[in-house]
Amino acid sequence: MRIMDKERALVTGASSGIGMEIARTLASQNCDLVICARRKNELEKLSKELTEKYNIDCEVIVADLTTEQGINSVIQKVDEVDILVNNAGFGILGNHTEMQSERQLQMIDLNIHALTKLTHEFSNRMVKKGSGKIMNVASIAAYISGPGFAVYCATKAYVLSYSRALHKELKNRGVTVTALCPGYVVTGFQEVAGMKLSRMEKLSAVPANKVANIAIKSMRKGRREVMPGMVNKPLPLVTKMTPMWLQLIIVNQILK
Image (spheres, rainbow, N blue to C red):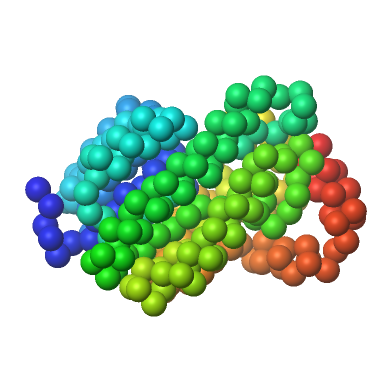
């Protein structure tokens, strides 16, 4: 049973990586949770861990957010939340014409469609009560065009642009929107994407728990966007100053 004066957060993609660490961070702050992902066993293990350690309520929803049915099931099962964390997402490395279109379209369905529909639904609920916080997980890839990572970079550019606009639209209505733009994070993402990290990339990688802590602090302050890791912070300025033809050459070499 929910205690009404406690915060409640919905975290998607909570079965691993950044999403799992965000759930842990929020639980440590006495926040009740609804955690969502496809992997039931991992979610149930996390729920057990958090309820026993922090004495919070942690509801599990198993759903595939690449499908309309999965998105709708979350909307129907979750009533009111104070915090929405749209973390679910994935990327695939490879030449666009050589990869299956179905898998790339699933990336768009999850990274863009699910995030937008959940944000629209829960932001409306937050506006009605006059308060709420939304965190949309983008990436430093939002600032670049990535040969070999074309669709992924495009989806994250959407998330960043969308979140910036909503931040302006909603902040005077009691709701803040924060875009989290992590660089290389020590998670299972690289394995799914088929990436091999360079020595420089490994050195600049930030642990997922540190990313989560920085992200939650920034969200609570109502910041528009946050980019964990000192190595990553110059990237937006560098991309503005670098001609696109040179950017594409550099990114292509990095992602090879």
